[in-house]
Image 1: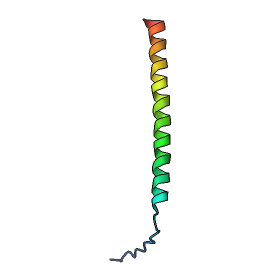
Image 2 (image 1 turned 90 degrees about the vertical axis):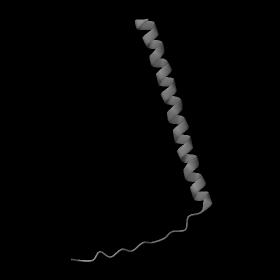
Image 3 (image 1 turned 135 degrees about the vertical axis):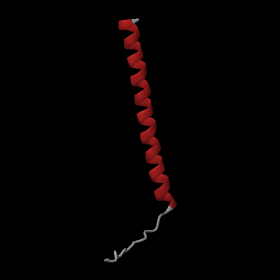
Image 4 (image 1 turned 30 degrees about the vertical axis):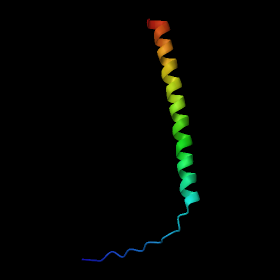
Amino acid sequence: MAEASHQIDYVEVKADDIIAERTHGWEVFTKATTWGIGATILLLVFLYLFAG
């Protein structure tokens, strides 16, 4: 059986990189949540006007 050789390159992770990644993730999450809530409200208003 052949042996698989592994080589792992470690890169220094700085706190600024972690904070920037989490900040970006939070901004994307809040934007998606805002659009989702807006679309839901709009859908409910249309359903109320046309089917209510």
